[in-house]
Length: 301
Image 1 (cartoon, rainbow, N blue to C red):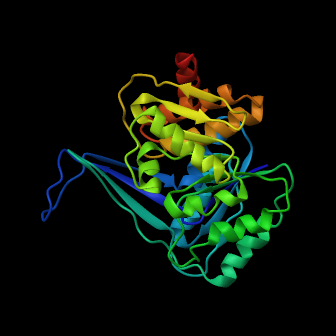
Image 2 (cartoon, one colour):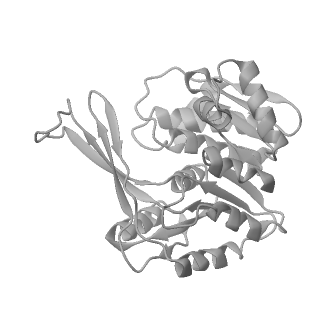
Image 3 (spheres, rainbow, N blue to C red):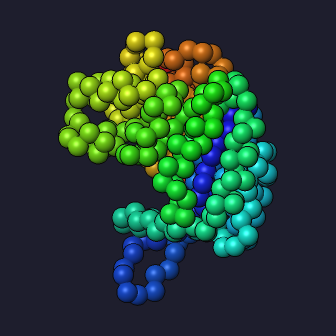
């Protein structure tokens, strides 16, 4: 079983305007909402690829109910901890002449409620996969991911970490199967400009020395490169099409890679499917549907 963990899921409320002017009442031209959170995005793409998975995390209030209902309608199994107080956050994405985002804090998570999550983590078995994705809420200990990974240390569990900076680095000693920094994140981690392929290879190599088994570096319009534990480097390009949406593209790549590797055990195939999923989401209003993923996968060939 593949488990995704989203500690602070959301409803992403997307509003479209011709222009946004501060200090006055602005009228939208259209709006839509999506279930959000990096782990949930991974679950949604895995479901599109017909890969069974379970979404873990915390939900609260009427927005939490909407998140759980939305996943159920998509046929995705969830096993969230329902918090006693607060509401799951609503993030606002403003798409006008420029794109802006307002990401909210989310509900308070008590120590008792976090312990209930750890009890679910203890049920994960040898051969399972867990995806730790996104930031850690302010009300949870900064080392929450490390606490979770310590619980799994003696089990043969495939670990995927999609996080940034110190949060990512602190997980490397647990030898994650996959991490996916982009070029900007590599620059932030190593405190220097990462420009060419030589720089990228050096940074990825250092992350692997620290414990990462496989490193995908997303290069935006230049595609992606995988530094794999078999000692090889794999490249995948992009498809040229109008970009409609950047939210969830990286999460889609992670999901596609996991699904591709589960199916084939082949790194080149896994990277190609990951790239197809990432591209397909970028060319969609929300997360990509399986038909778009299949189309892009063939075009990448």
